[in-house]
Length: 393
Length: 124
Ligand SMILES: Nc1ncnc2c1ncn2[C@@H]1O[C@H](COP(=O)(O)OP(=O)(O)OP(=O)(O)O)[C@@H](O)[C@H]1O
Ligand SMILES: [Mg+2]
Image (cartoon, rainbow over all chains, first blue to last red; front, top):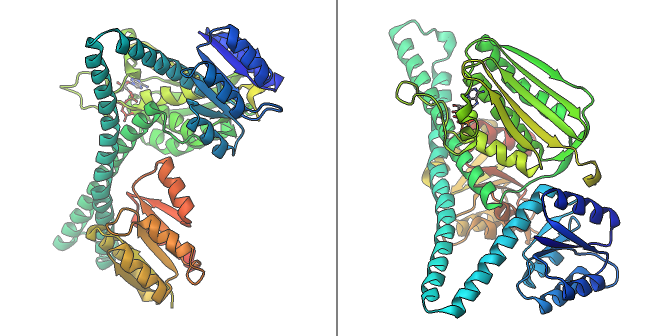
C-alpha cells in the first residue's frame, strides 16, 4: 500500500511517515499541492492524506486536481479543529473523510484502511460491471448488501429508541412510587406491624424494578456503544488528561464494591504519569469495566492495580486472584457476547460486551489490551497506551 | 410565580415529568402541560414560562422547530429550554445546539435529576 502524505508542516509529515511505515505502509511525502500532483502523475498511490490548509495551492484545489487525474483515489483530508465547513466542502468534492489535527494515528489507520477497502471494492465492481452480464447480478447483490447493512444500523438505533422510551417510564415510575410511599409511611413509623411489613415489601419490590430496569438500560447502552464504535459514528472528545486521575476516580467508585466482597484493593499508581491525549469518559469506561470484571470473577484475595510509564507508553495493569481464564480462551473473551464458564450451572453475570468495547476504545487511542491468566490462579489485564509526545497539540 | 411547561406526546412521560416536579407546586410553582409542539409554542408566547421541558419527536411540530421558533423570537428567547432526547448521537446534539436548546436531558432520565436541574434553573 502506497500512501501520499501532503502537508506543509515538516513535523506532521515526519510523524505520519514514521507511524504509517510502522504499520507497513509505503509512504511518499510532498510539502505542497504542486509537488503532490507532480508525484501523482508518475506514481500510482492507493490513498492520499491531504492537509487542508497549505500556503499556495490549498487542500481543496489540490483535491480537485488529484481527482482530475484519478477520480477514484481515496483522499482523506487532515483539517485543523474548527474547519468543519471547508472539510464538508472537501467531502462534497469527493474526499472520503476527514480527520482533525492533531491527527490521531489510530483514527487515521481505521479511516485509511476503510477508504482503501472501499476503493478496491468499487474498482472491482467497475471491472465486473464491464466484463459480463453475470456482474449485473453481483452488482445488485452488493447493492442489496449495502442496503441491508444500512437497515441493520437503522434497525438497531430505532429499536434502542423504542426500548428507551418505555424504560424511562418504568425506571421513573418505580422510583417516584417508592418515594411517595416512603413519604406516606415514613420509616420512622416502624416496619414491625403487619402493614409496616407490607409497606416495606412494596418499597423493596419497587427498588428491584428500578434496579433491574437500570441494568436493561445499561445493556442497551452497551449495544449502542459497540455498534456506534464499529460504524465509526462515536463522538470522541480528545483532550490532554491525567491518567492517574482517571484511574483513581474509577477506583474510588469501586472501592466500596471490593470492600463489601471482602477483597483487598491495592493501588500502585505512579504519581507523575505523563499527560496523555485521549477521551476521558471512554478511558474511564475501560477502567471501570476492568474493575467490575475483577470484582465479578474474584471470590477471595485481592485486586491490585498499577500504572507506570515505560518508554513512550503508559502501562496499566489490573491483577486479581480470582478464578482465572484458561489459555484457550484468552482471545475469545475479547469477542462479542463471549462468556466462559458452564452456562447451565452458572448464570452469566453480564452480556459479554465489556471487553470488546474496551478493546475498541483502547485501539482508538492507538493502544493495546491483553490478558495473562491461568485457570484458577487469577488474571492480569494489561492496557498499553502510547503517550504520542509528538502528536500533542 | 415561576411557571414550568411540560411538552411530550407520550402521556406516560408527561405524567412522569409532572410527578417528578409536583413538589415544586407546594413552593408556588405552576405546572402547565401540553401534548404537542404547536400548542406548546402558543402557550410559551402567552404564558412566558421560566422553563420548558420539550420532547424532540412529536407529530406536527417537533421539538427542534419549537426551540428554533422560541430562540428566534426576541419576546420569548429568554425562556430556558430543556430538550428531552433519547438520542445521544452527534447529529442530534448538533441539531439541538443549532436550534438553541439550553440543555439536554437524555431518556431514560432520573426523576431526582429532573427536580435538581429545575431547582437550579429557577434558583430555588
Ligand atoms: N478478571 C477476570 N477473571 C476471570 N474471568 C474474566 C475476567 N474478566 C473477564 N472474564 C471472562 O471474560 C468474559 C467476558 O468479559 P466481558 O467483560 O466482555 O463480559 P461480561 O463481564 O460477561 O459482561 P458485560 O458486558 O456486562 O461486561 C466474562 O464473562 C468472564 O467469563
Ligand atoms: Mg464485564
